[in-house]
Image 1 (spheres, rainbow, N blue to C red):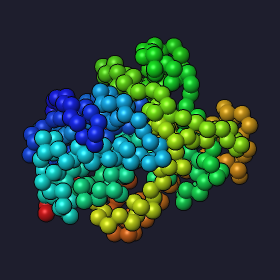
Image 2 (spheres, one colour):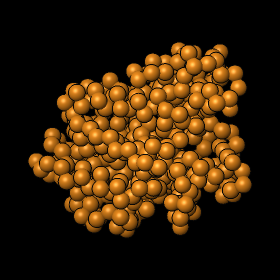
Image 3 (cartoon, one colour):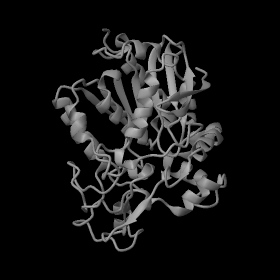
Length: 366
């Protein structure tokens, strides 16, 4: 498939979207992750059949969409509301718009398969909670935990500290943020966007191949600042001395504001969920290199108060526990673990990823 770029106004902001396939094709919505854009889906689009209608938006503050502020106190709802508004545009999703009240899933329902990567997985879950009648199926690729990122100690999301210290904007590497803002394309500095792309987005940087510059363009499109990435931080009396503020992306991911496990389990319409992850992911992991508690346990962040007070977040275990509850409440999910794969299954293991996506698009007819 080849995509074309469009610009629409939805939910009061300008949104750039990549569109591919016939308007009446089987609808698929692709939601990208943090520090990326819809460009991150281009390698996948080349492998998809022309029978699909694919829409891949740039979230606010990414790519060519408006640098609209992110109200962190709404969790990821700002993003989900933007996406829901796109589903109302018949020029993008004719079937999804016409079948908004359908209750079945898969191709026959006309409802989109919603694919969310990393942060986009959290947006997809939020979309399901708030607009379950608009979702035909979920494909979660290395998604953020339903209990947010960092600051929780067990499979039920118990806070490590009352203010969720060690999460939010204050955890961002300031050198990375500065280089991101400057459009740094170098490779020598460990915190350069290219080095981060190679070291953490994938398990083996060789898989980036000829797409590395395109993917770096995507990463560098991130809007930086207090309203976008990373956001605002507030001081904390608890280790490591920072807690989430009320503005910006990393705060919207913090468990202070993003905690939807119970809402996800309770949603009335439960479409099938496929969860795809790599066993070599260093971002969303029970041993995440972006979790300050885990870095503290390694001695990378000084002053760590210890395992009893501040254990690493069991991100993978939390997601599995919530999806098991979802299934027990009448839903269905399957977990697909890709050996040797990192944080971007659609880039690293595209054949397997496409197979899982197509399995969801060919669900039971209405």
